[in-house]
Image 1 (cartoon, helix red, strand yellow):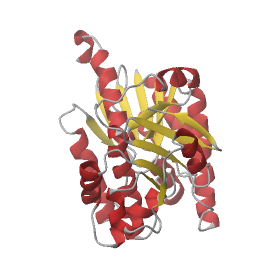
Image 2 (cartoon, one colour):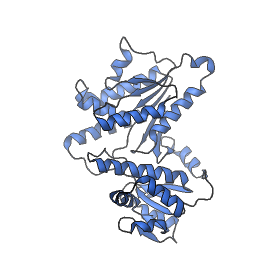
Image 3 (cartoon, helix red, strand yellow):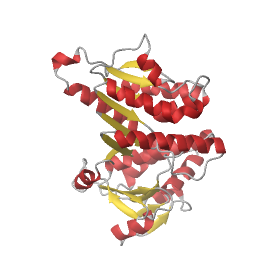
Image 4 (cartoon, helix red, strand yellow):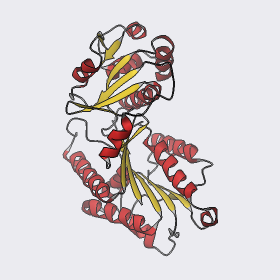
Length: 329
């Protein structure tokens, strides 16, 4: 069984993937757990301080869950068939993540180079055959404008081909949106379940409408909430966030908030304390390539983290693609 988990930066996909593979491992009978290892294949190469901090954060996330970590940066097939290869029989495995593995094969010395797509897909499919349950994490990096260079375009096309190939054969494909897992492969089941979900927290009227740029979020939101008066988060005074009924361009409001030296935690606390019933329309900005600039990376991450909290608090969450809205909570 293989599940492919995708989502943007800061969307909560890693936490969901860890919970999923641990749950699958927990379903095994007690007499089988002894010979059913729980593996975490980590393929983020520690290039510098920032990647080292991310690696350490993931180690903290999975601490105490019973994972055996395998640091495999390249050549998944070779690692699985080599003399020192661990047994994958009955194993539950989390592979994180395909975007890193693709970059390693393309750019690191000894990588697959022009054969990256073939190498990554073949390795992942071999792993699926060898283990009992496989959960694979990848990234959505396709909602931004064009790449900065032809080399980056090749990377995005390679990653897209790999994602599509794995999704085609996966038993389940899940997209994580602000901490909410949305079944992609079984769309009928997802539609049936989404409208029936109730808020886990009573007493909140917060609403969230999200989606890529230029997808028609505001027009869709106005059909849902025709009486709401909308504030433009790109230009409104920062203090207006405590009193407005609805805010558009919330991601741009977050940018201005951070540029003013405030933190994402302060914004979360302020809105939950003083404007819990706000309606938010916000671009998904975490699905593109990781920015080179440190502020841009922090900004993108902040929007994901803030909206993950608000999606958990919200009474309703809708996602808009090509002008079509789908209720996901």
